[in-house]
Image (tube, rainbow, N blue to C red; front, side, top):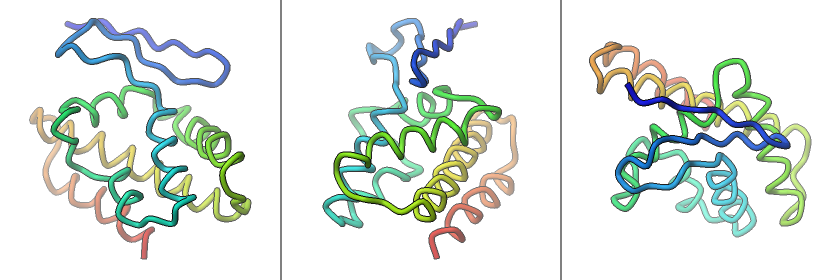
Length: 140
């Protein structure tokens, strides 16, 4: 069993894991730096990459690390904090739009949990489908 220590420091959700696959620990801030950059550039392709169900080839454990970067109790608050902090210096984003993106990324985080559980045989692919459908419904 791999031990994982959730370390919270000044609202930064960071996971410290044993150095498996030679990957550094994941900070949710990384995800929302990518979001803020894509949002500021108004680049839909880059934005879509931030909510991909497939990890990039150079980060095969990205989904697991995003999932482990928070918990169900803190996910919404953590995501809201990171969206607000990452977009504050780049482009003005309204309160309503922040809340909309928070809902999208909470749904993404939940879908990642179902994807990972499905890959480990701990969830049905029907649940994965339903979670992903919920996420995509928010984008329409």
